[in-house]
Length: 201
Ligand SMILES: Cc1cc2nc3c(=O)[nH]c(=O)nc-3n(C[C@H](O)[C@H](O)[C@H](O)COP(=O)(O)O)c2cc1C
Image (cartoon, rainbow, N blue to C red; front, side, top):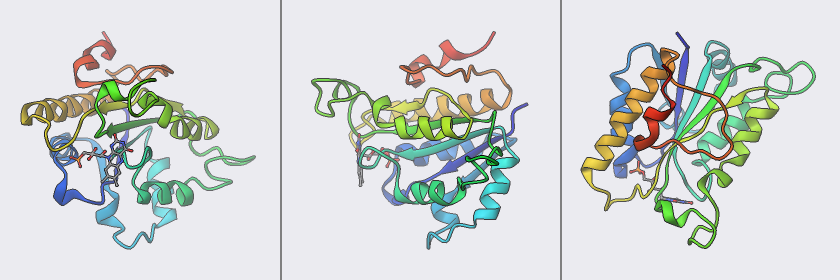
């Protein structure tokens, strides 16, 4: 069994549909550690020792967040700036995260066809996530393909959000049970509709 840590960052949960549904689905999964960063640190006063101890105690670290300005909400960036410290996460003696896996679960307001050359976002969603991939690389971590929901705005059908949340629960349980293929793939984004293609066995 993999020890799995979900670090969830959403500053506007009152307005959230997708991430709130995902979070509810995740709360039913036993054996994972789920941390709501905005609930834990409403004043952004991150406890670095506690966060580093959490990282050390887990094998797979999953960041769950809505894409805000082509990146994560600011508290997750603050968390990275402080928790992924020199001498802990990288640098000569910074080997605490080596061999672990980083994965993202992101929701994007833009539809899938906007996230390509010629679309209004001009780049693939993966391109905007390269800083996370390279952060993982510098820390000696593997970077699994992100789990993504496109077009996650208010107009999205309830049914599609429910399917995505249910697929998220399946994903979290499969990672815990070593049943999900976490191998790196530079091009792929995993969606609810393609999740089954990465299940082992
Ligand atoms: C401040 C802000 C910035 C955003 N930036 C982006 C963006 O860069 N790309 C995008 O596709 N959607 C963007 N969105 C839309 C959110 O990603 C979308 O509302 C969210 O993923 C929906 O999830 P939720 O229902 O859990 O809130 C932004 C929304 C806000 C409020």
